Amino acid sequence: MSARLLIDIWHDIADPWSRIGLGRLLRGIDLARAQRNLSRAGRDFRAGRDFASAGHDEARSSASGAALPEVVVDVHSFLSPGDPLPETSAEAIAAIAASEGIPIAKERLRRPPTKPLRRLTHRIVHAVRENAKDPADGARRALEAVIRLDDWFLGVDKVSGSGAPAGSLTQAAVQTGSELRLQKGVQPGSLVHSEDAPPRGRGQAHQGALDADQTPLEGDAIEPSPRTIGRIAGLATSDLSTLERRLEIGEWEAAVDRDVADAKRLRIRGLPLTVVGARAMLVGAQSPEVFAEAMLEAAAALSDSEHPPQARRFSL
Image 1 (spheres, rainbow, N blue to C red):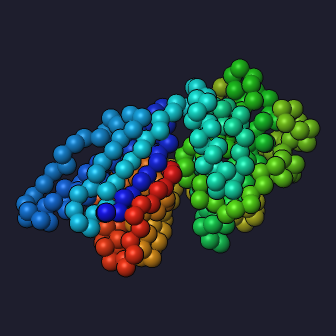
Image 2 (image 1 turned 180 degrees about the horizontal axis):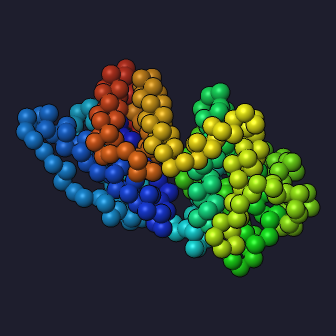
Image 3 (image 1 turned 120 degrees about the vertical axis):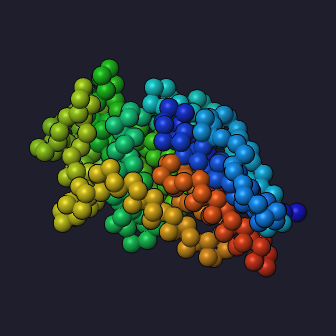
């Protein structure tokens, strides 16, 4: 039986980057299959399908060829910010997190994150990973920082127009799937009383929780300054200038380039695909051709292995 590559994707149908990235990932699989057929037939090819509007609950694509593994992509759609996660989706995400040693309450996952908080999640994850000693340490520190920042926001009034507490950054981090492969034993509860958490506990605003250089966004939303983000992420003062540069738009391209490089290094060890490589496609910052190339490299790695796995599953 040929090897199978199973990819679970949590797809935010309200996020245009998620839609674009999903389409490119699926189109890349199609291109890899067409490229394999081309190598046999010796003729030019074009992708047979357009996945740009992909957003269904489930999408499947099978890669043919002796060395090319069968690819099964299960897309689990949800809607945010606007609506909380459905009960079943919250349970599933909580179960995945628990399997990685990340205790996250299902109730916490059901709070819808606001757009500013989702953006902030991406920023802080990449900022912390940039300063980490290794990927595992970066993933652990990123999750800790996100939970700490979530606790910080929960203690600030007027975060949303309705006056309700801020949406969960933890939910946003888990939904993007960028940091699920974490070290075991993370204890989020120990972070609640960090120096950046509101002194009076959850849900009670206190001026001491706010930095003087904090700048309000349009409307009632409040977003921490780079200095506050740096403190919450545990970065040294000397890192702040670098952090500010990383918060610029161009950081996305650089971060994805690093993920692709990491994926290629991991594939050398025989892995057919990595979480970071698939995530790079999910955020929509690479082309379908890049992903197709990665798929063909994965097929070569599988065929060269003495004991190829029958199936591998990745959650994004």
